[in-house]
Image 1 (cartoon, rainbow, N blue to C red):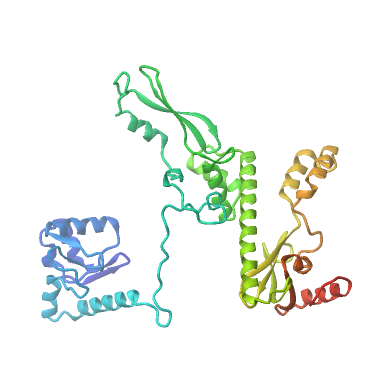
Image 2: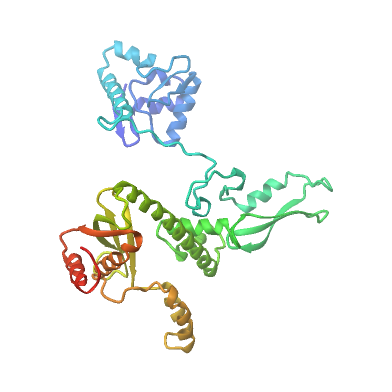
Length: 409
């Protein structure tokens, strides 16, 4: 037999390639092999081995007869005969395979065995279905979305008969479009009967369709916005929704996340109160504080300051500092910053504007800390000890403001 040839697809004898084309003496000519990873070669191996009444062992990379028992130390007869002939190279590789399998299946020492949590299939984890808690829902009311070629659906309907004229003339047409949701009409071209009118997505919150909210939520989770949705729809040949619809869905998402975070923080504050058990109206806490920014450098437009309780590890409060407002930027481009229309619009938008910081990006951390310390008593806490990093600007800034404000530090 020829010497083995090595490649990225696997190691096998050169005679195996010849026997694949003949497929008559495959098992008699194989001396040692690794299961090929190339799909076409896998099919050739499967066809040849199935002709010999063999099947794949899902627990290892080797093959075995279907009549043998499921045993981790099983060695196929063809390899057992090689073992008797003194072929140590194959058995060494086979033993290494067994050891790797044992290591993979063994639990980590000192950490115990990880138990995967059981998730109820009847629970919808969408932000609009959670309502700040996991509520079992009817599975029929939960959207189950797939991407389908509309032409293939019509091809499938050609084999169905109309219940009135009993002819195979049914077709599906798209009606009114509401974002990614369409009205579907099942028509018969022979008798012109309108069978069904249904939306491809149900309405979940007021007039917003569930599919529109989920698309907006999905892209926001990966840090993308409307332009990314347009690119995705362009590649998939899907008609996207308008930027106005995206804005409405984004605002509903923001309201839902705000409501959820408020309820979560209320529960966290109760847990912290129960841990300290001092019964006082204002609980003194030792906290750690640090800030982070959306982008690196000293030009980030958004920064976040966070206070964490040192005893429980809970996030007590946070503050987002922003130097930009997307609504203001869009309206400035449409109306003009110096126009009277923009001034009138800004008077009504001022209370909802996202801009709450006008200084440098570096000072966002200090201003966020000051805001958090000011409203700590309204939450029922007083931050008397702060643990921070080597940057002393925030601590010194709080000490300066302590003299002119009612701050305890």
